[in-house]
Image 1 (cartoon, rainbow, N blue to C red):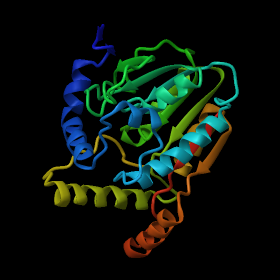
Image 2: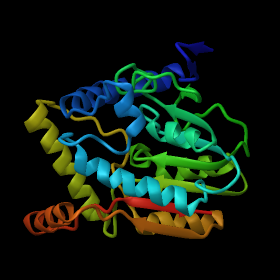
Image 3: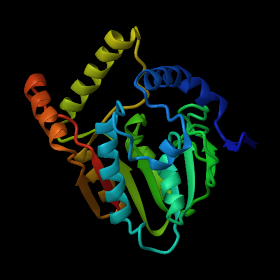
Image 4: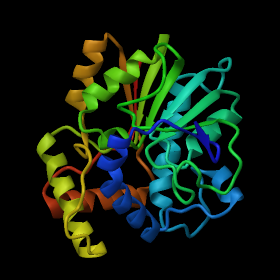
Length: 267
């Protein structure tokens, strides 16, 4: 059933399970200035205006988006069918649809500020409200499935990627963008602990909700690809010099490697 342009396939049990996380997520995103309030800003993403409070983050997103398009030939090939899983406000789906691809944006957050209905624009692509572990799609529907800064929210990333792989046609590509990824799982665990401490101190959230593992490891991604029989490529997004210096300083201060962000492609 379509409500406000969004096809609703969220199961009641998933909605109840995710409600505490979504309440927390929306509050933090709003406080951090992530809401897009006009059409011009939405259409420009992942480029942002000068002075945007999240400019460095979007610089990384821009690099990762460019790598994803290049590595999957989405810039030059014939129109493809693409699923943007964990789409947020659908900026990636919007960009891909403007490249001529038939795109579907799926997310658990369908609100009109920072979810599927957000961005204050009409969206000429399908919007689907569902959990990416309970999707309403038949097998072999897509040429490319992109998980854009979303796979680390999965309770079991391996199970999620296996489910995504079933949606691909022969020769299709799985893409994971901008999930924090580590060589050492203990460094990822330390990052998640630090994030939860930050939620308590900065936002006054007494009991932070972590819906998934919170990070990925390169070894786990490779194991999944091996089981799927797919070749992989990873392109790290390095950002500007200021970002690199911040990462170096953070590694020394925290005594652990910072997360790597970029684009992982399995095809």
